[in-house]
Length: 554
Image (cartoon, rainbow, N blue to C red; front, top):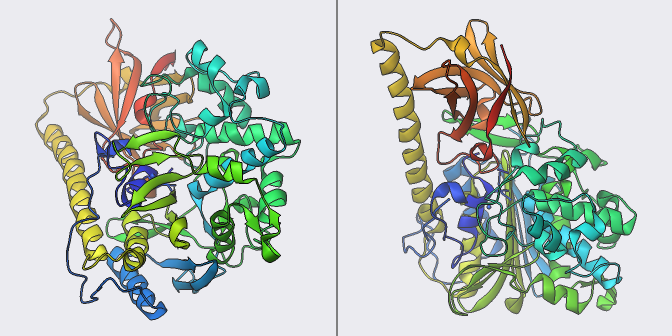
């Protein structure tokens, strides 16, 4: 759910041995967080020097972490970041760096609240685990037994789909399928409509055969929590997990925060400058990525996870059983790796992998202008939390892996330079692709003898799950307006053939798209499909899943 650092890209950078296994970069979120997270290459094992900060496989002191964090802010143009390190059950470093927003320049501290984005998914999985402990459901309860109206494209998949399947990214749906119902935040689709519309999303692989990250099924998982428990999803999370752990400043969504005086703004880069951006998801997406928290509170969550769900004095209380904790951290969907030394997989709300012989549970999160990462190496009793207010997954990976290297005995890697070089290369490639498109447009407009009559493309069009789009004329320009996603509004420019470019008014979206029309026998538009122009467009802009048909010719 996450612009130039989509959540899949966030995931790309989060695990040293991990999920760089997709066929192209459009397959990945960060972040999400924008990114909670597209075919990645393993960049983390590249040996380079560390800008003058020499790491000799020594555990970083707090002052050295300060240096890494400050250098990361400068290198990746991140306004603010918060970092926590937990070791042996104690928080040994917790500090904020930079500013909450470039609008106010107020400092980030250990209580500053960030959207943790897809790190919320671990809480959703834990909530379901608590209901398993209460014997109200099992992991393999059929979803239709809880939500009778639940229906996917394939009747067989619908009938066999379990609660476990909701959490494991193996449904057969493509990466981020249907995310435009919740992203960007202006979407007017409600939860009832979303669940109904799942039946229109066509699978791209066979059921339970392939990993493809999704968000919508976690929203369904949150609805399971609500229907089984009798509480709203948000109330369950806050009463049963957040309050018992003493996460007193955390809420299940931005809208539920009691005090918004110390909350960050997200920031997106545009033409060399940062733009403060608004919220990313509509509130129906809370179970997939709605939580707001800080490093102080998230440290309590990480400690509880390292203690198998136990907390309180002498660990006398517990959120969930040992069996549930084991299931959360048991591989459910293989992502890559053919042997125990190189596996990466997805559990229930967590990415799981082997890092230098150590088991690692981690997740990233990405929203527009925000990316986050939580990393736990339970055998080492080590936890690292990095929250940022700019959508560069390279930033949190630089910090997390610089800290982790000292504990793993890894010498000489320049994490900041490695990630920055990779980031610059990807951005250069993307900029070249986008520049060529606009160069082609400018050249065609100068040389074209005749141009198509825009009126032949005007009309109202419908996609079964996304809803209606109107193509019309506004202020002398061809105009695109989505009914259910008001932020998807912009002017259209002729490209070539029957293809146009839509350029969104909100430039922070960084998601301009091709619009390719099909024509009827009268050479007038009877439908269109879309595709992102830039390979770095956030995967939650799943334009490729749309198939519009004419409903009203203008």
